[in-house]
Image (cartoon, rainbow, N blue to C red; front, side, top):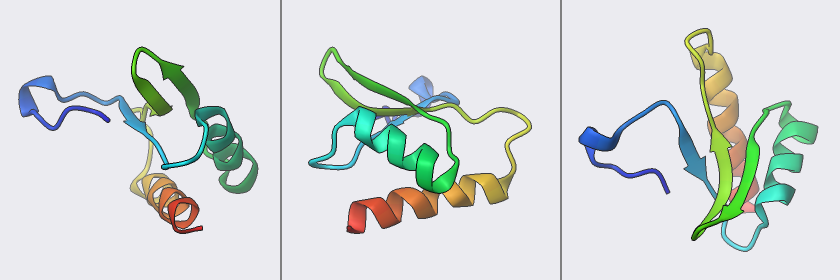
Length: 74
């Protein structure tokens, strides 16, 4: 859901899985993958907010990508 326009880029992204409530997605990400996110369901946005930090490793980002891919495929 995060705009693709480079002028509006930032370190915060919102990701959703079709047919899954944001709170449920956040719970699965934490319980199964130990990935902390915040469910957002307001103002036309339904997904989880992902906010990588300067100390977030590429390996940790790989876990997030794998998690979203696996959840979306199920």
